[in-house]
Amino acid sequence: MSRTLGLAKTVPTADRPTLIAAAWLHDVGYAPQLASCGFHPIDGAHHLESLGWSPEICALVAHHSGARFCAEIHGLGEELSSFEFTEDAVSDALTVADQTSGPQGQYLPLDERMQNMLTRHGPDSVNARAHAQREPYFRCAWARVAVRRLFADCAVDHRVLIAG
Ligand SMILES: [Fe+2]
Image (cartoon, rainbow, N blue to C red; front, side, top):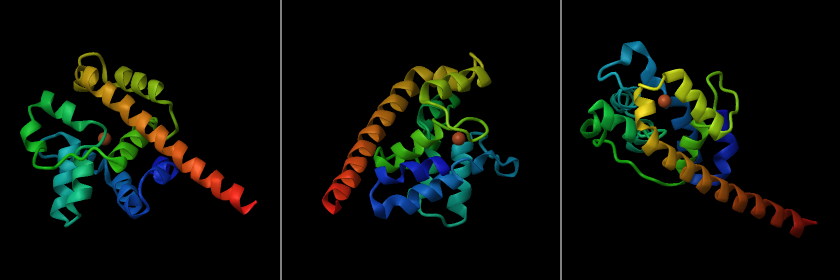
């Protein structure tokens, strides 16, 4: 969640509360009492849906960090498709925040985070099997967020220059 605060400037102001809420909630599906299909993005999204959270937040949780690539391997692609994936600044920021956070919440550069994930889950894991499809998505999302950060920082510097 704290990583998304640092990336909040890359999304439109009106979307920042959605990004922060999705960041708080994105892994709620890991709670054992919520396990249904056993795939935490879907279990979490269904739980949030049952509590009346907005379709946008449920979809962000369902699709966080390229869940669609893992869902296909789990045989859950159709179930996931009940939540609409939107590739935009908010989903990019949520994915990049997640994929630059280590197991204890510490910052990890994307390459270290991916290596950490592959080591923790093992070579036969769904994450490893989905990696060939997920890695390009992570890198593209990271690049889009980097460009948005640059533009956001330039806008701030520009205002400072004008004020000076
Ligand atoms: Fe997750």
